[in-house]
Amino acid sequence: MISRMTITRKAMILGCGGTRLSAVEKDFFRAVQPWGFILFRRNIESLTQVKALTDENARRRRMACSGFH
Image: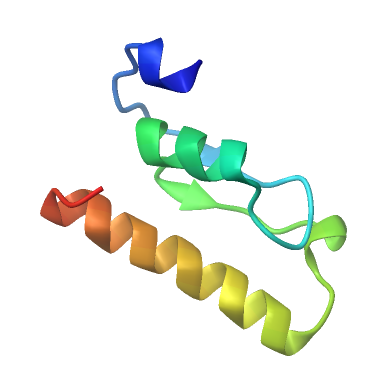
């Protein structure tokens, strides 16, 4: 579904539904390339898990900026 959508990058900050990114969320974030990512209580399980989640988002942002998807 997302691969058929034409999305232009817009200023937005997004969150995810749980403590890990789902495959759909990963595809969506890759497509829209949000400016930021916000964490809510539902996203926090432990320090290690939050670090892994934020590291994954940072890695995806760097890849998107460099042209690798």
